[in-house]
Image 1 (cartoon, one colour):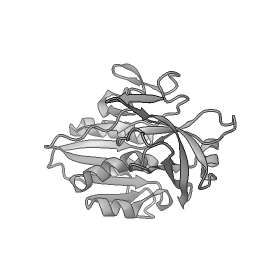
Image 2 (cartoon, one colour):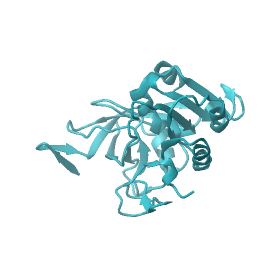
Image 3 (cartoon, rainbow, N blue to C red):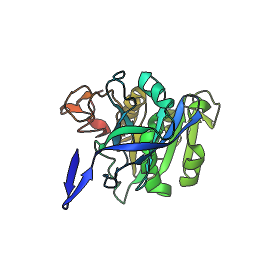
Image 4 (cartoon, rainbow, N blue to C red):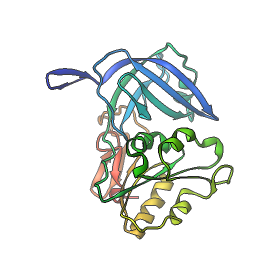
Length: 261
C-alpha cells in the first residue's frame, strides 16, 4: 500500500523490526518498532496501526493498536494483554520482524486557541491520548485513571510532560481515590474546556452525559474489534446520530455528542 504525496511514494504497508518489547507492569507492555523502509507516513495522535503478531494463521487477522509515541525511525505501541493476539505479542523478542499497516483512521483535532484541552484517559486509553498530551504539554489539563495502581502506565513520562495532571484509582492504591468522572467534578469550570477522551465504553458513555450536562464539547476515540482496519469488513461499525459509522475509517475519533449511546 502506497500513498503518492508530491510525487513521492509514501508507504503505509511495511515491515518493521522489533527493537524492544518491555513489560511495564501487570499485563502492560511497550513495543518499539523500527520501520525497514524510509518513506513511511508519519502518524498523528489518535491514529492506529494494524499489526501482524504472528506469521502463522492463528490468529489470522492483524490487531489494531493506537500509536503511543513516534519519531522518524521509531513507532511505539503501548498495549494491554487481553486475548490470544496480545498474549502472542507479549512474547515477541527484539529482532523479530512484524507486518504493519498504517497509520489509519483520523486524528484528534487541535483545539482552537480560546479552549483549554481537558484530557481524560481511562486505563489503556492513555495509549491513544499520550501523543496528543505530548503535543499540547502544559496547555492541557489531564486526568488519568484506572482501577488500580497496576493498571497505570508511563506515569514518570506524563509527570514530565504536564503539570496539570490528576491521577486517580478506583481502589485508592495510587493517587486520588476516585473514578475519572468523580475527579472531573472537582475541576473548576471557569475556563472554556474542550474535552478529549479515550477509555472503556461505559466510561465514555457516562462522560457524554457529563459533557451534555456541563455544556462541554469534545472528542472521543473509540476502541472496537476490527478485522481489516480499512473500512471493508464493517466489523467496527457503531451507531451515531448520523447513521452507522466505521470506527476504522470515519473514526476512531468522533465528536462526543455524535455517538448514539
